[in-house]
Image 1: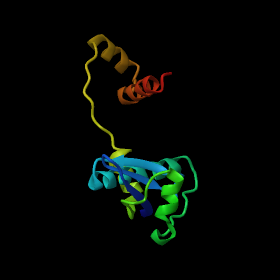
Image 2: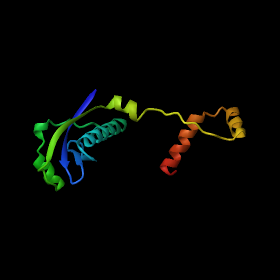
Image 3: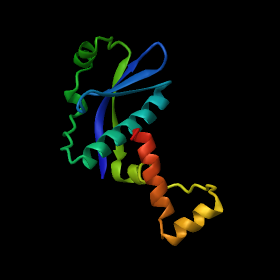
Image 4: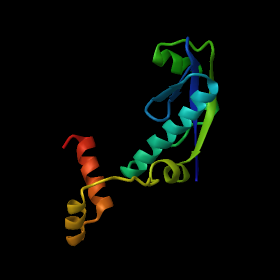
Length: 140
């Protein structure tokens, strides 16, 4: 299902800032309009996916006509002069399948004795590696 939210694009000295007023002022940026739009899609997908995974209610999107660039710019203490509003859309489920839930194959080398010992104990190598990596990443 397609999720569509209005985003405010603000021209900066270098690139664009992008803000989603409906989503707790979720923000990202890009080097140019195209990059900013691409990053806005990434940002929107990640935010909505996280909300769904956490069981949070996803806010209803405003229409473009309900968003005031002047009010958003004032809230952000920036200039609305070279700003515009654009709708950003993403199929969160499809995006997640391709970016968040996609598995990748890794090849690794371990000593032969460790391989044999692990196989004797019927240890799942993929699961063990994932658990060990998560522990390292989280600093546990």
